[in-house]
Amino acid sequence: MRKINKNSRRGVINLFADFILTKIDRKENSIIQVTDCGPFVVINGQTTTDKPLDIPKITSDFFEWFSDILNELDIKSFNTIDLIKYDEDINNIEKGWVNVNKSIFVEEPENIHQLAITSEFPYGYSINCGRLMTYYSHYIFNHMYSLLGVDEVDFYFTKEEDENEDFKIKVVSNSKINSKSIKSLILDVFSLDLREFNEKIKDYDILQDILFPDQEKPYTKQDMLEHVILF
Image 1 (cartoon, rainbow, N blue to C red):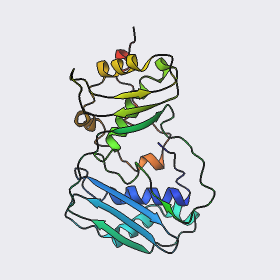
Image 2 (image 1 turned 120 degrees about the vertical axis):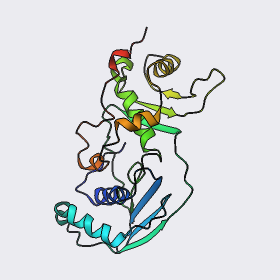
Image 3 (image 1 turned 30 degrees about the horizontal axis):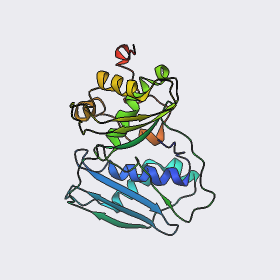
Image 4 (image 1 turned 90 degrees about the vertical axis):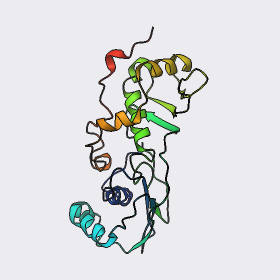
């Protein structure tokens, strides 16, 4: 996942997306995308809830909660445009490629010049809209990077099964251990049960991803390490 500097305009926009998300029931599926266009901040999104958000109140609370960051950046207010759609039909996102890294949050170079800054995944995405899948992918790799001898892998997470009733996951890496053995190890040790894993992180405040990226997360714990053995 990209490491976002909270004391930057990009940090504020991504933090605002997650802050809006925290005002929606965690059980709802939601995708909130915030774009800083300069004069206006556009809040695009869709959610399964039918309860409209009070964006002016949320914006006011955001400026109160994070006044230290906003004052440092000399951000006095947001002129918001609310384009959120409610009562939408959004399925759980439980498959896709995830780049997982030993450092969890990876610093990436900024673009030289941008006319607009838009929040990016996983910030603004609810637990069941790919965020939980991403957390679980990092949880798996955090148990295995020493064994694999690499700092990162590309992991395809899916709940689809093959003819042997194994999940059709994929692993791409520079490890000396072949992908077939890595896949077998993952399937032997980890259940890939997102509902079960959701219980482990149910009390986690997603704002911590941006505010304190270097602190331990519930998805970085190595509570299955004794089972990660490759023969």
